[in-house]
Amino acid sequence: MTKLAIIGGTGLDKIPDLAILHREVIHTPFGEPSAALTYGKIAESEVAFLPRHGSTHNIPPHRVNYRANLWALQHVGIDTIIAVAAVGGITDQMAPGRIVIPDQIIDYTYGREHTYFDSDLSQVKHIDFTYPYCEGLRQRLIKAGTEMPVPVFKSATYGATQGPRLETAMEVQRLANDGCDIVGMTGMPETSLARELDICYASCAVVANWAAGINDQIVRMSDIERNLKIGMETVRILLANFLTMQSASS
Ligand code: HPA
Image (cartoon, rainbow, N blue to C red; front, side):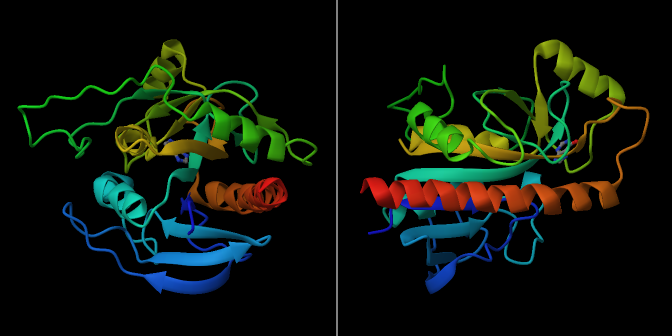
């Protein structure tokens, strides 16, 4: 049974290396997931793939049904998720095109359905979220990213913003003051919902642009698209390395 899923973000709505085996439509108590689950093989390992923004990239970050997505994946037996996400770079090393495996999150989102624990109030549940990502999975991703042509950063704090607009320069200053290294719109509540479901979850972030006000230019979509193309190529290699490592160890 497939136990590993990849959630694709902007720039990774499809995985070209995936030899597709079949697709499965899942309905959930929380509504419809972003797309049917696609099962396939990369480097002899079976994975399930779910494009977060839909197969035609028509779901903006604040409209993604994160609860349905994660529930659907767990329902089919997934216990490990690699979440690919595009981000803006805030601190010096987080230059466009680079890959980051974040280890912390600050949540600035609002109004999103963010928990599974809001119906049965006789059993209020609080998850531990001190270390929001699955450390074992993070380490395996970092290992898969060694000796890559582009550096893969081992730690970063991800600031999750509401979107869909990009930030103002002062908002990015505030994120920097808070300790954020990168900024993106989809990290929450995806990460905490995975923890609520006890799914081992780590993120592979691709820096698409310098965040607003970090350099003296405005953020251009054409630059984001160009950098994402380069960054996603690196992610594909990293994922293939990861899956090769995984099939060698199983
Ligand atoms: N801000 C928020 N989300 C993003 C950015 C950004 O600059 N770039 C890619 N996703």
